[in-house]
Image 1 (cartoon, rainbow, N blue to C red):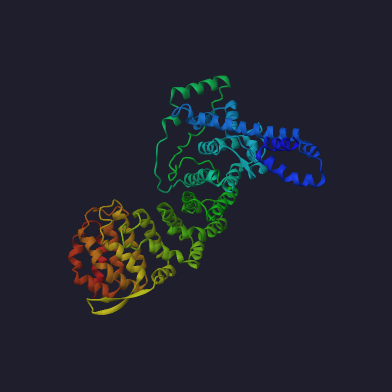
Image 2 (image 1 turned 60 degrees about the vertical axis):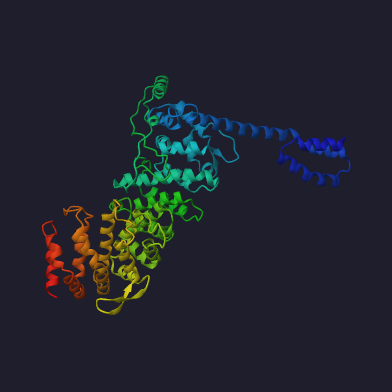
Amino acid sequence: FVDVAIAFYLVSHNSATMELRLCMIPILFEHQTDKYSVLKCLGANEGENDSKNQLSLREAWKERVWYYLAFCVDGGLMPGVLNIKTIAKLATEHDLPVIDRVLANLLYLRPLNWPHQQTPLNVKMQDAETMKNFRCNERVLERLLSTGYIHHSLKNNCDTADVYSQFIVSLLRRTQNADECTSIKFAVCRQIADSLVVCVESPIPIRKTTAPQSERLRSPTSRRILRKFSNSHGSDRRTSSPSPVVMEDNVTYSARSAFIDWNEASIKAVIPALIEMIKSESLDEKLKVIAVVGLVNFTRKQWQAKEMVHTVIHEIIIGDALKYVSPFILSKHEDLARHTCSFLISCCQREPLKQELQKNSNFVKDTLSILTINQYPPYYRSIETLLQATSLISSLAMDTAFRTIISDCLGYEQQLDPSHDEIFEQSVAIRILVDVLKDDKRTFFKHRYRDRFFAQLIGALKNLSLHHNVNRKTIGRLSIPMLLLIIATDEKLKENTDPYNLVEAALRCICVLTFHRQNCQILKKLNIDQIIDKRSEEGFLDLIKNIGYMCSNV
């Protein structure tokens, strides 16, 4: 009977308690031969354990209830009409304490392994111990972040100006629940990138979208909710900025959700946390994309003129990021490779960062590998990625040291010149650029970015020819026939007003190439005079005069 009672006791408890009791039985039998004493020991703390289990079960039940209520509110009951963003907008634009309490319960933020307490949300978020390791409804947190509700709550109820920056840093450094943290970290990184864009008022090209009808509070149900809470809880209709347009697409971002107040303290806290997150080898690629976009916006020229960004801070932060971001240029993710090129372009415009790039110039080889034709289709990466890679080569080639690095990084190869019946050495890097310009596979023939891309590519060849006689000779031999073909046949742009005028780019490149005698001879053989005369009335007169003068002296 006692054996059956012991077995029943063990089965009637949860698995964790059962494992503990099973471990205790051999120890108890060593000291107690009486089975009744063993049963008495097993049930000694039964009331205490039951009390703890009941509290744990009750807390888990309450959490599930609030999670279910959050699902119902966030489109579960009235999809397209009522959601958490709508409610958060009400709480942001109007003084509605009841709504604040409801949102706090829907979020259900609490320290890990601790019960939920009815404490104001802004108090919890300022508690360092709570934010170190907490549990909450991740979906609700993402919604409240994207609508600016948390920023509004902390800003209006806290004395410290940088409390919101500290809060998003704690989110970036979270390690538990990696799958759930990804969406939160993405929302935070998107907010960082958007805030930097708005601050400098010069955003990188982004895809725009329109907010859903439900987010504009135009539905009858939303208006009824607004009237109800406004009439019941006061008429304090404080004005605030319009709610940001929050996009559901995980690779698009709006330039309107600027909730971070950037100053020296927030930069020192947020940007290093962003870089620290990038260092993680297991980081999701979408997170890498949006994090690099934030760094691109941080390195834009407009930041250099702002007093709050000291040069030393800027260089230390970005210098630390270079060695971790530059390998992303080889990523198969087109957006990540493209934005990495943009980041490196921004860095090479500052002398100390340019020196840092020269110390680790392996990224130049990686950039040229992006431009290398593949053996099988698709022959090239997306033209947007190629455009940024070419822009990076062109920017680097403006520097004398990088001009040599680019020319030498892939070595040299021997090539036969049929016109002179001689073998000459040519830079592999230059040959890759010229092969793209040839477009033998007709990959870019009908693409809308074709002129812009080729103009940038010709600009890179021109920059590689500056003050470099060997490059000038090699580029002249390989590219002059194609440049003349562009000048003779391209009729899409007839006015010299477009910055990506393909004809103008070709004329400027030829103008630089004419500083080598052999190139002038090639131009005269190909009847350069007849070709450029057709363009003399299209705004290129100065360039044509320079080319004609240099060729006439041969």
